[in-house]
Image (tube, rainbow, N blue to C red; front, side, top):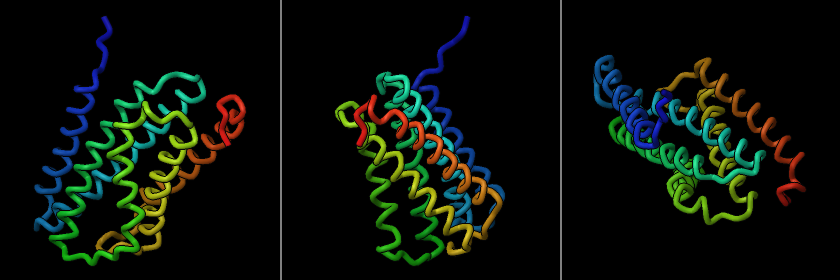
Length: 191
């Protein structure tokens, strides 16, 4: 008998992984500044993969003209786990006394607000274009973050191969899904 994976199980798993990230960072780093820096780093990577899965679920729901009930659960999990990531990130900034430049963080702040609000309004959004704005905007914020890391613009975070792979993966997803959305624009009254 096949057991269905429930929303609560997935949420618990996500929170458990976030906790493991913190525990491993705590065990392998000397000071709390580095504990939160590495917790934020790896929590952000977890968020990227959850975002990509949410975008995939949206894509499938869109192409197959299904409802967004399954998507709503996944974006809610994404929102909760990304809030945990934000906590790690905020503590890292505070403990490491990193400068905050309002203009640079404003785009990310808007993305965080969208991530928190979207699960609660997803069923009220009737125009597919607004869903696309959410997914592409949040994805672009991920993309810009990885680009800054590739360029070495982040204090305390050297460029890694992961940043290049994540950047390339996001570009591929944007083009693949974007092409299919464009191809089906008349069917779903896009643009």
